[in-house]
Length: 146
Image 1 (cartoon, rainbow, N blue to C red):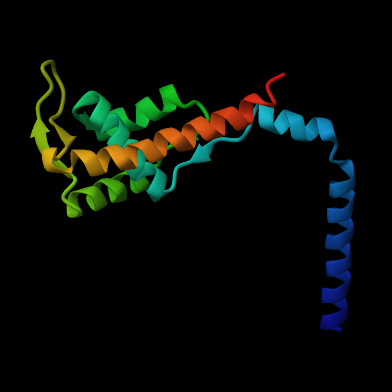
Image 2: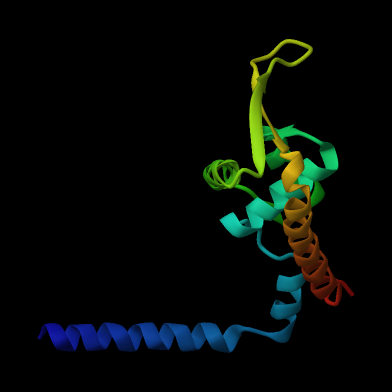
C-alpha cells in the first residue's frame, strides 16, 4: 500500500515537472540572463574579492567590504559568515593583518584589515582571479542585454 502511494506521488511529481518544463520558453531564458538572480559568493571567491579590495584601497573593514560588493557588483552578495571565515583564512595564511581603529567621527571602533607587504604578489595573483571571474561573467551576461 505504501509503495503504491509512493509510486502514485512520484507520478504526480513527474507530471508536475513535465508541465513545468513544457511551459518554459526561449523568452524565459533570455529574461533570466537579463535579470539574473543574486549570487552569494562562496569562500574561494570571497578570499579573492577581499584581497582585490584591500589591494586597491589599502585597508578596509567588514561592513565596508559587504557594501562595496553590493554597490560595485549589483548581482552579487556576501554573507557575514563567509566573509568572516574568509578573513580568518587569510589571517591564518599570513596574508592579512588586522587592527582596531576608532573612526574619526562618532562610532564604534572597527576591525581594519590590510594585506601584509611580504604577501603582495600572492595577493595580486589571487585578486586577479576575482577580476577575471567578474570580467568573464560580465561578458557572458552582456550577450543577452539586447
